[in-house]
Image 1: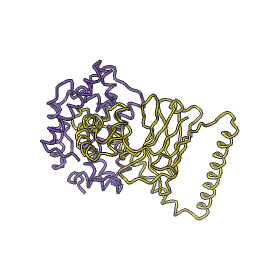
Image 2: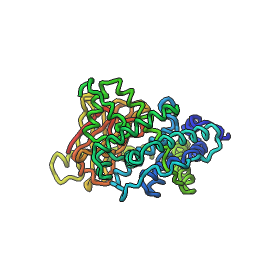
Image 3: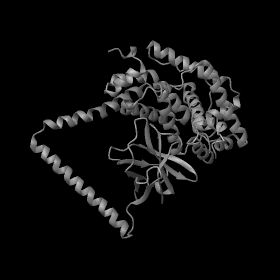
Length: 192
Length: 232
């Protein structure tokens, strides 16, 4: 069976039936994306590798529970990765020495390595849409958003980290999400 | 907070998990009774869930895929080993059953020993935290058994309803108003379940614990109904 031609949902179904090659194909498609989210959260290569392994282990174990109506496979993977990474940060009480985390790579694309045409096109389109939307935000909103998303910081933690008033940070986060919502809905990005 | 006082302006940060604790609780209380804000929240959650697509690129090492697949392969072999057991001679099967019975009896003995030690207020080998059900499931109960050095623990729960596949229970370790995830779990049909718990800090440094219902995979901060709570 040529797994590269299958869509993500079919891969998950095969994984639920212990098809290890299907997990390999899913990794080829999203391994880099998962690792990127983990690495940008933890800033630690070894921890990011561990989290990536945990995410695909979880997919292996929980594939039978996946519900396509609730989330696309890609957003499911991102959600698991982010939750796992923030848990790890809190467990390790890791705080970056500086607050340089950001979206500083908006011009590049996390292109998957699979040649599955539909998956490739959809993923590239999503990445392009979200990157373009974030690029529209002022730098201070991008920075606060990155600390909230990648580091799991709360309003008050962001305010303390940046030395900004709490109200300013709250406004930045609110405006950033409102703008992204508006732009992404206009782009009709699949919100699954 | 009344239904009239909507929390629209706080929903973006709530969807990101960026609200501080007091604000989070206020939003949760409001969401529980406001369908309009629930709809708004879903829209912001959809946005938040896509942010990872814009993560700056980081290349995983070439060996990682092999490591992951080999890790799964080891797990996969386990069921086939158990199937092989059915072909063993009957005598070996009986020996296995005997060993299991001995282990079960010794386990029961150890549990009784722990209970006796607590009752007699002798120096504790384990520490325990009793957890009680909330209004949602008043009959539910649980206990966290923590090792003497506080590094490890086990949560055991009973009489909790089995959740659907989209949800899991999540244990929270609570200290200074911050909630740290202790892991996710589900229960069997009988409502019984367990979870191995560890944290970077000793578990007995957390004065309180809670269990909430969260989306499968867990949440960065509590978002669902609390079903169990307990304090040292």
